[in-house]
Length: 213
Image 1 (cartoon, rainbow, N blue to C red):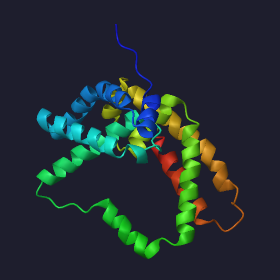
Image 2 (image 1 turned 90 degrees about the horizontal axis):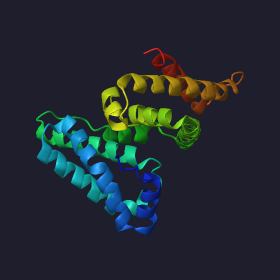
Image 3 (image 1 turned 90 degrees about the vertical axis):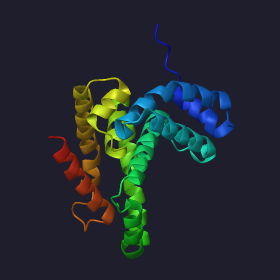
Image 4 (image 1 turned 30 degrees about the vertical axis):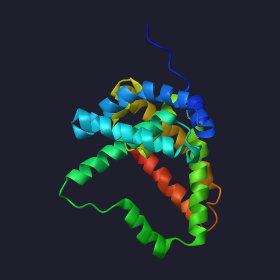
């Protein structure tokens, strides 16, 4: 008989707020094997995958008090392992990559005014609220693909569903987000659009395009 899935949100809350080692061990036991398999997708080596996953768990424990904002611990760990695995591959490669963080810093120094930053935060808040209205599985699929950068096959493996189901859930998520966000853009249709509204219009255009993929 398959063991019941623990409430990861409750465990994560205990870890972050109470430094509960027992809760951390439960989370570790539940996720460890799947994270190893997931990392092997990228690095192709079990020993390296084990080292990378262990490193992620250690870092998450060390930074637990600053991680109370994490709403989905399971997705958080898979995305962290993916990032750590890609960083490992980058170190092994002779090719030099430009870090997106460096690009952001350059842009920040030249283009981000206080008004731009405020409007961007408002946009992110509106998008976050819209995402939270999605059905649980559609919301998780959307976050893993659009925020985590995972592929359909990876999400299917993570959630134990078919790639076709992943595609269907993503389509439903995109359709609902378009429906929710469109009125926000239309509210100022008769005025000079602000940066936030322009960003929303761009996002709606992206969602419209993606819904046909």
